[in-house]
Image 1 (tube, rainbow, N blue to C red):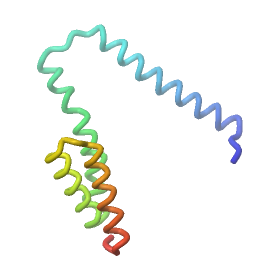
Image 2: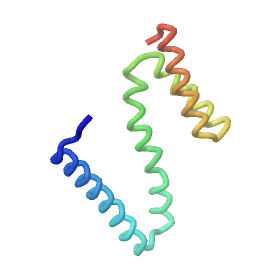
Image 3: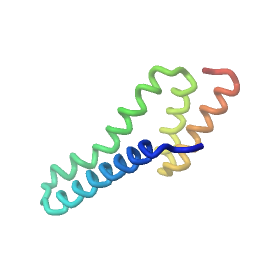
Length: 102
């Protein structure tokens, strides 16, 4: 597989812009003193983003995905081990799809 020069330049350019955006955000926020209320609010953002990415798939793709999401949530809640929860979720989807449940 060959990558053309314009494609490589585009990929490297996007990587540089992404890196610059993240670094500038960290540099800016390291100089800002946040209130306790703002810190508490910011702690909720990763979870809400995850839910907004996962919910459409869980609610529209079928029972295999819904059952896998349920298994993932239960394992994460019970063990507090996110890696194990993700592996269980992927395993449940795989098993249900192979068995014919879509």
